[in-house]
Length: 240
Image 1 (cartoon, rainbow, N blue to C red):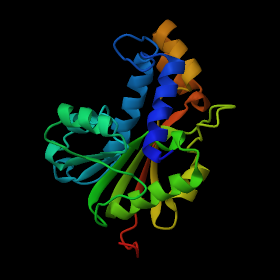
Image 2: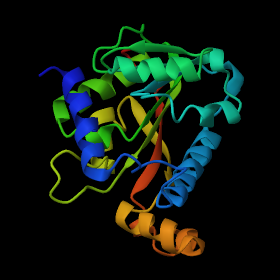
Image 3: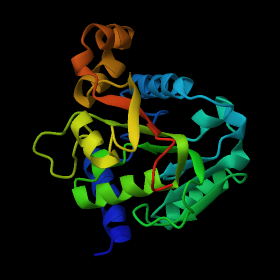
Image 4: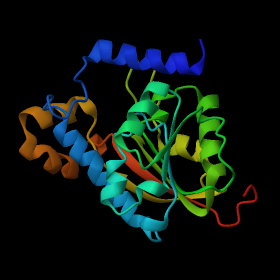
């Protein structure tokens, strides 16, 4: 089975098991505060970046249907400077319909056809946690660094906590982050912004005790499972 078929099967199995409205913000009250917390982490992370967002060339890796790209637009990034890549053609078609002024391509993120140093900002959301294969994850990370401009940024919005007894997930811990992205050698970690609580707790609070969600997240930071890591590529990276 090729990577495209494996990815499609992963999503089909996930929604079969969890239900079609698992991540539906409109119909599932478990999702609201998880989404708000994640969005807050992205806003704080993007605030760390230097430069004018209107001039930044951005690539969303594993963009899916483009569900996260509105965050960039409302923070001042130009649609014409935003691109996305996803391995599933159906996802790319959805993204193209939703954002006709952006550029989307069907492709394998471990072998991207973009030139070296093409983008000021590389983004991903909940991708590495769903790639337990370290060889594949390392290839994608290497490609992300390759197409990032010297002095550019990588925004990794992912889960730092694992799912016990689930081999389909592997947390993007700081240790794994260092191994995949060569932190300290080619890139450096400049910010970690906390976001959503671990799903069982966060989803419960979002549905039943929403007024306590951010109080608990602040009082018990170890319960925060999702974070936004900001890396900066070295200006003198020899690969650029």
